[in-house]
Length: 80
Image (cartoon, rainbow, N blue to C red):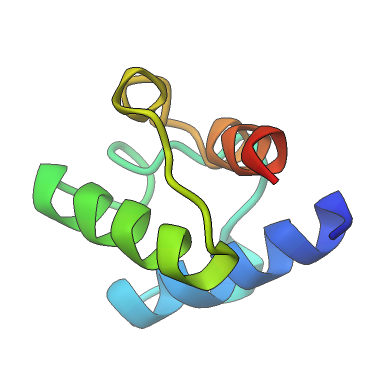
């Protein structure tokens, strides 16, 4: 799976969790907490849904790196 597809599919998941935003609001440098107002529960929901979507398991150590959308994309790309 290429990086662009990961980006696109993650944007869909984010919009499902936070429908007040659209895919065009999300850039690689978008901060999930500061820009999209995600709390820890929403981040965990995103992680669980991403694991299901991509059939991967994200290491708990990598979850701490997920604050910026692009970092989440890189973590998932590294797990595939």
